Length: 296
Image (tube, rainbow, N blue to C red):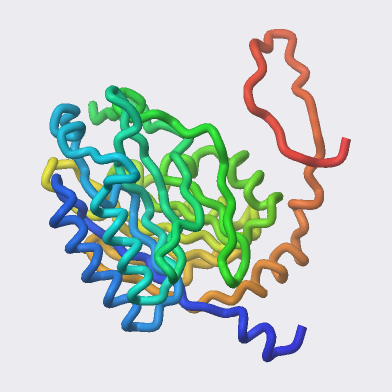
C-alpha cells in the first residue's frame, strides 16, 4: 500500500466525556454542545459515554422517563445531529424501554446521513458489591443482550461493547477475529473500580486484540450522587494511550491510523495462534463459555 493510500485511511476520533443528569433534556444539551465542538475541531467519528440520556438509580423515576427506541427523543436528536454535522456519531448507550418491567442499555452507531448503522444491547450486567458497601444490580432493571455486534466504518470494522463488558475478554477476542480494527467501550465506571482497573483493562483489551480502543466515559459526581471515574481513553493497538480525559466534561481527540493495526498484528500475530483446548479438572462443574476460535 502506498503512503498516499495509507494517509487516506486515517481519521480523527473524539471521545465526549459527560456528567449525565437525571433527565434526558439537559443531558442531550450537554452532549450536543460537546459533539458540535468535536466536529468543529475536525472529528470524523465522535463517541458519547454509556447512558448518555439519563442516570437514574431510582427504578420508579427511571421507568417514568424511559421511551422506546421508536419514540426516544434523544435518539431522534442524535440522528439529526449526525446528519447535520456529517459525522459518524456513536451514542455510547441510551436507557430505553424494553418491556413493562425491563429497560435495555443500547448503543447506537449513526452514519453521516443520520441512519442507524448498528445497535448493540449490553451483554454483561453490572451486578457487584464493593467492599465499602457500594453495590449495583443492573440486571434488576435491564434486560441483557445476547448478541455481539460488529459494523463497518469507512476506515475499518468496529466492534461494539459497553462498560462492564470490558471484563470479559472472550467477547473482544471474538470481535477481533471477526475483523474488528476498532473496539468501542463507552462507559460509566465507578470511581473506585476505575481507579483500580480502568486503564489496565482497556490497555489489555487493545494489546490482546491488536485493536484501537475508544472509550468515552462518564465523569464526576452526578445528580443521583453516583461518582464516576472519567479518564476517557483512546488507545492504539500496541497499548499506547493516545489521548486521555480528566474528571470534568469535555472532549479528547486523536488522529487514528488503521495501518497500526496491521503493524501490531504482524509483530505479534496472537489472533492467528489461538488453539482450541479443554480443561482437565475432575471437579469441574457445568461448562461455561470458554473458548475461542483456533486450530484443533
